[in-house]
Amino acid sequence: MRLAAVPVMASLLLLAALVPAMTVTAATEAVVQVPKINLRSSPNTDSRVLAVLEKGTQTVVLDRKSGWLKVRYGDRIGYLRDRENYVRMMDSDSPEMTDITQAGKTQDDDIGRQVARSKPKMPDFPGPKREFAGVIYPMHDIALSMGVSGLVASVAIHLGDEVRQGQLLLQLDDAAQKIEAERRLVIFNNRAELNSLEKRIRRTRSLMEDVRQLYETSGSVSLDEVTRAELEFFTLQGRYDELSADKARERLEHQAAQKDQEMRRLYAPISGFITHLGVDKGEWVNPGKVLAQLVDTSSGILRLAVPESVAQPLRPGYTFPIWFEAYPETTRTSGEITFVSAAADPASGLVQVEITFDNRKLGIRPGGKGYALLPSVRIQE
Image (tube, rainbow, N blue to C red; front, top):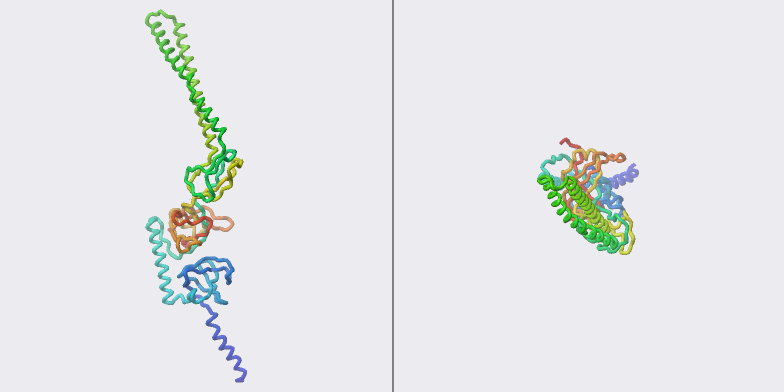
């Protein structure tokens, strides 16, 4: 009996030695100790990076094996390298964890106070916050094209150039339009007949008034002579009005010719950067063909899709903390909600929210990933 008990005792001792290394309680947390660490989708270094965690970031440990920690970070579950100098394991009720949690709350409170000062009408959002990921878009992204067809005479820009509003970008050949505009100008400036009529009208008016006076005072002229004088005056006046209308039409025709010539030039409608250039000198272009892409990155838009419960209290003008995946440490800033969709997406049930931020100093490239810290539960305002 004693000999049979030896293997059992050995097994129990071995199990007791292994349990502390394998068991992870629900209250165990891992705090990042290095400046940055990748949260990966699978326990290997070739898997996709879900997020880049900064020093001091807290995660809930779900499992621990084979040199990796399975953790929960916000609404994402991923894997961290299980190395002593990478992360620190501790219980949530330890003094150190209490200090870290309190520091995080203090930082969130400071951000909340800053938001409250900038937007006094924004309500206080109690309860936990949650980060939501979205895509960064530029404030303006314009496809430039011509309204007329023609041969490209010159291209004044290069790919990547920064341009100012109103700057000439390219020009089509406008030799024929230039000649037509000059011809219309010559016609419009020809006032010979009008000047002659003005002189004749002045003389005819004076003659008509003299004839009327003679008829009314002395009767030395007949009524027919008065009628003929008036008829001549009104005929000349009518011709003058007709020529004046012709001059107005000629002025419009000259302006139209100038406009036709101007349509051969493409100007920058806004300030920004040329991100696409698809034309060269000597090419023939047709109306509507995209010749260049102009992007204004002075302001950015972080476009999110959030649950209805999160979108419900949000209003345009509210500000929230945002940051960007490419530069998590240097680009933490705040953005202002400028759009909350009135309808949810039928397929996903999510609501589109847009947060606008000043990008002049940050220089964040559109197309990247960004995050916003929003209230995670519905509240009553």
